[in-house]
Length: 397
Ligand SMILES: [Zn+2]
Image (cartoon, rainbow, N blue to C red; front, side, top):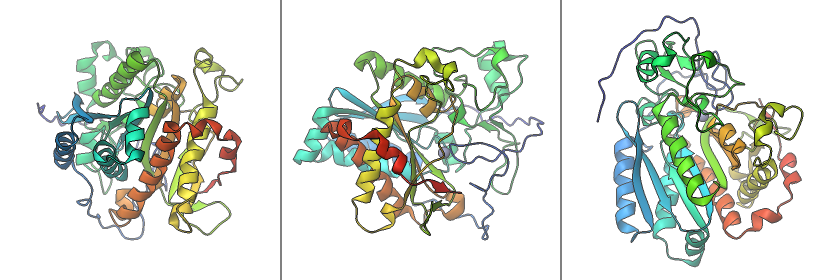
């Protein structure tokens, strides 16, 4: 399936280094690789694409039919994008990881959870399978994961081949062509896939919508975003709604506001201005399905589960910056389509400390995710006071 790798240099002035969800902008301190020690940390303790393939197949084989594994699509370089479904309930929870390929804890957490939920026969897991349909897309951007970088591997030339109507268009604003000490996007360019989503799930790229910007929707020009969009639409058609959508990321290193505690994980449920407000008026066509209150309840469920761990780093949880207008993110687009949407941002990129804190961070992700899915399965999430969301401490940047 592998396409021939193309080397294409786009002479572009922008130098972009991403800062997780927030902004793929210039050399931000967020993911600025430039922490004092510049060594490249090993990431071999995480799950690479081959291992992911093996592990998912193994879980499917040992799950007695509880886990259904499909190849939902292929990356631009021809790697499988997997969709793993477990459970047969009415409530649909979709979770994806590694839309940014240097943000790897989510994939490990998802594999661990899929194994537990698909193979454990204790009442807790039986209830999860009965009440929920969990659709996991671990490592949705495998080319980026293999390269341990943020962007996928796709040139603007290839995009134009696929969408000839873009011949005269400027490359999209989230196209990476920079070079730094970690990545050479000049000889191997790519896109921030997490700006390629559009709340109009049937959108077709038009030249007049390029180069676009961060407050405008994306275009579904990357095969990775197209694949996830198709999984989402299929679930919508089958179940009527994707109740919950969770996207697993990493961020820079910060403090929990008003404390000396380093943030372990930040959460958020707000990615676009509420379509029911003046500020969100441009999204008014989505106002009937957008459910910001439910997103807040889901976040509180994750937060509470982490606080329940007892005095530990798992309590060092903060709220991600809230004044966002990012309709091109998967979270923004799916929130506008009616999914209670939750962002997880664990501390540090692999360029900051590799796999050093892997065990703890994976545990934090799993704890938060179980907090959400258990509360949806037993319906306790609907009793949570959404205003508790606003009491989660902010992130001190
Ligand atoms: Zn990210």
